[in-house]
Length: 447
Image (tube, rainbow, N blue to C red):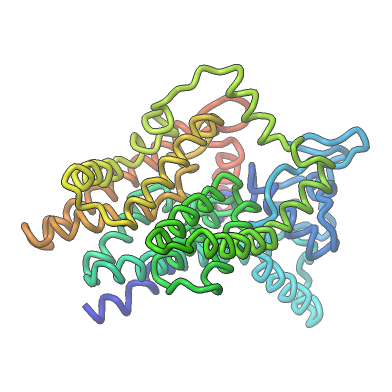
């Protein structure tokens, strides 16, 4: 088991980077779609020294143009809206870029060094070096999140085998595989990493002012990645009140702790506040808020579609998560659910309400991507189920079960990429740019 644990993470990193680079070779780039919004801040902050991403949204993303010494620019802003003054209204958060900045800076330093020694490569922020370094950075945070989740499970289970099997299932049998190794330049890796880190600190560390400040800062920072994940603040409030309920002076103590939490949450959210104010003047004008309001007013709420939609449903695309939910019902009725599982279930419920109200599950994506921050909830439950299964029937049965669901997830991913992924316009299937890239690579191999 010691040898297995020693090799586990190097193998996980190798597999993840291999998937990322394989996809990169086929697609020719890692930045496209929503990823442009997150990536644009990297260029703007490091190269331009500001957060105005107007010129970044004029860059034409193609493998050839990305690696050109003088890349072409569109005369107008692409993909997103621009103000009357022509300034881009980049509605994506800066949190992803902040996390990936060290990797982008490393790529920039390498590009400058290569040019200095006479190897002429593009140093404008869009080339393969920049995108690959940044993509590997996203993979790094995903694996770091997996490691933190592993430590969290082991703290409660004291079972290394079940813990490793659980996180193997969470990574390879859910959409975390897709967003943690295949389509990485998005917010999902950051959402998973930060929520896992939040619950690790909440459940593991002793209650003191440092813990409160840390959780507050993470909550504020999560806002700049994906605002809905800041619902972890509700979990902290419930947790803190539960700790103080037996103390007659708990209201006073809780009040002091709440002030610290809110202060550091504000500090963590400064990037978001500045960004929204700079871009929209009034943060309430943000398109996410406007779209949520319009959806609630004009649409009939579809209560189960975020779970069972054929291409974007959480449970229909990653059916392994049905098992933890059934196990959760068993724990509730048998009154065996721990306080950790109760708190995680509340977070999952809050996410479900938010996702249903805003209709975010409808966006073109693989699986229930907006639930990715709730994977610690499923991990706790799956670990408990696998431990029971292993004790009763042995390791082989639990391993076979996880293997079947991994194969099913790989099949669903392949089906999504080949037939169900929304591409240019309203068509479904393999993207035209990918077909063209494959044709180009095949032609190159012939010569």
